[in-house]
Image 1 (cartoon, one colour):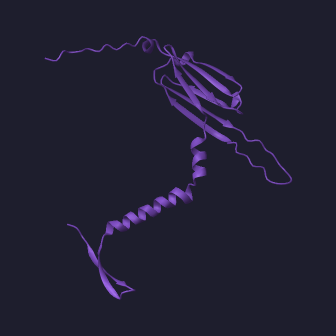
Image 2: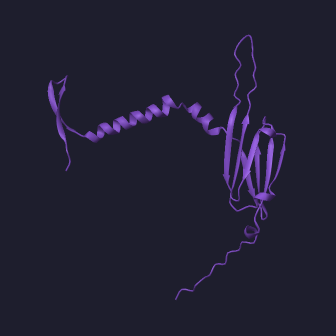
Image 3: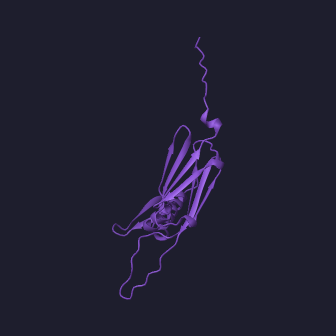
Length: 165
């Protein structure tokens, strides 16, 4: 059963009354739009949202027959500030880019560098032998070689076809 109210509205120009059907759901939709607008603009400005979502490191993943190669770009981060953990199907890399303290007597320094902690977790497309992972870190580039397990290397799937009668 639909509940509606009729509201009388006085039109100031014509001095007449118009009947309008009251829809309670319309008010809820209006409140929802206002809340969405509030959260979209006031609390999370687009520039803050972009910084929050791009904090991390760019990565490339390449899969070969024998291994998965993961390459990450991390300029300005020392190897001692990195933590790399590998399971048979995920790689987790976390670290911290420490800020440099600069003082300037005249004016303000503007910095677009992002400092702080970060973490990236990658789900791997195949199972790997996590005890044989090798890592190389040079000039801000981390290269991980993740050898596949023997089962993944020899994985062949046979597809049976049945003739249609």
